[in-house]
Image (tube, rainbow, N blue to C red; front, side, top):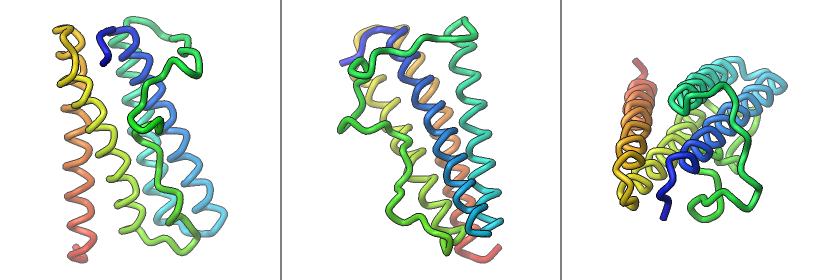
Length: 154
């Protein structure tokens, strides 16, 4: 159970930084394979994560934060929540599959923030985790709309 605001912010910063990096990696892979539509989608997702990273750092009240030691992170199932599902990634990936991949990562991020909020007795941390969860919830809803639109061909 997490009860430290500083530890939470370290996790949030790591989560958003890793999400941006992985979205960039997926975009680079799509560029290599010539899949421009999916590349553009992942570039947009990377920018969203970088915006979240800046917001998390601003909320922490500093420009830089030193990382916790490698064993200092406490992730569900020892996996960072917004890690992408690489198993389905190839040059033939369609935009729908890319959106599903991103949606799954955002949902895991939301679940993580909600679990921190639900599991802490620190009211400041609870409020902060709920705020982060609310942002993730918006992104999940946005991606669900995009996915539904894509599936309907609109």
